[in-house]
Length: 286
Image (cartoon, rainbow, N blue to C red):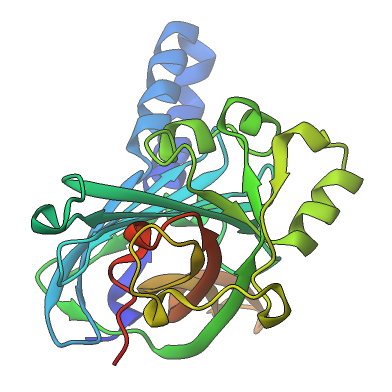
């Protein structure tokens, strides 16, 4: 089932037309109905999505118009919980992966990873548009209309959690459990510094290039040796663009209006330094 069955909420316009004459008679009623309108806009959408391995997962999409942010969360087939946050106020993307640990190999119950990058224009639909999405058939299993290639990112900077509020107010809540595993890209850090973010927010990690002598974790046997870890994830379904239709008017004129979304799938491949191979057990040699 494609994303054409998702449409925009129309509650706000319907109530607005209804309360206009009432507001003249009773200001109290206007206030009450205004509150009703604000809470009638969609803020959460649950979508059934088919993953690359054929399994079906439930994806939760939340829009916060006040904070101007979108959150996408779903569980992968291996049990990993993926959380993606788009912070439009700060133009920041946050990826969090809660990876189930291998208890028999000395790991904790789960390991938290966070990757922070710049949010580019038109990567995902605005939060106010996401808040108004509805789906006609909640049981439909959806696949993205456009499957985008994987973005390769080498993350050689660490983010200081205690000062990360300068970068995005969402990092502390989303990445609180990651602490020492919050990574950023050097080019993004340079941009943020130019925007006024303090240098104390970031820490330079050892270089991951071959010239540094660090081996890829998949080639390292000693669990306490530093290495270059790789982690990949894919946002299997998210609204990436708005669709516009044209209305027909009696005078023959037409005007565009939002009538749906285009869905995309996009992968991300992260490479970053870890002080111990033990922190990257999933990156096995094949």
